[in-house]
Image (tube, rainbow, N blue to C red; front, side, top):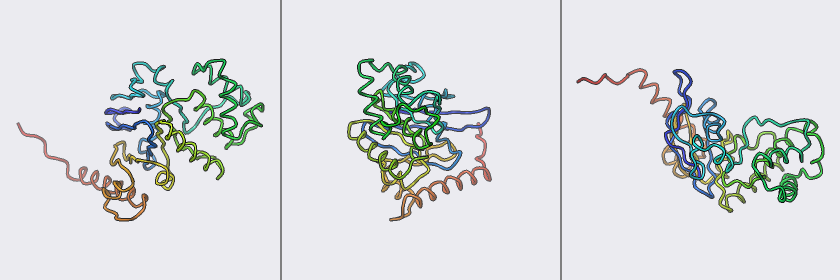
Length: 258
């Protein structure tokens, strides 16, 4: 459902995302973790069609997002790290606006909008202006809008930010339910415990490169940390990459001779 091929983003001489190759099949919850500045949000923005890659390809359900962006975006439910909401709209009006963008059939809007408002416990607040919503309510409304068109791919950057414990539990259960229905979920998070508990596989990005990918057992094996938790594996793998970079800078390879 999601495929990244040699995905790269550079600004002048700085490479932020460096030739990332990755596949996320239908029904998988994939966690994307890394230190601050590792390239997580830049990768997600390219996947969502918000940012053009310098090179490489993003395929969503087999569609190249640079070749046919409308068709690819129509298959994505995107929850960005800093969502924008029209505060002078009510919750229901915002869902109507979103439904029009994604060409939700008019005859289905009422049923779908009520279903997502109820799912995210907003049915009693749907006619209030968004400017009166708390941060957590706004986050839940963004989730509702992202799922309104029933996308086969969900891409989320820091899904639990601003949610209370009830909201966090709800989103966990939602992701598991969507995965059972065959939805591919790509989730970036700083919360390693969340990734460990929820994700089928995890990718670790560091300095723009995908340094490790696998389930928890595979990451622990790659990091050689035994029965330790994901945090230990994450720290070991990113430190190993730091050490490799330091060694290369200190002792660059000799130039080729011809």
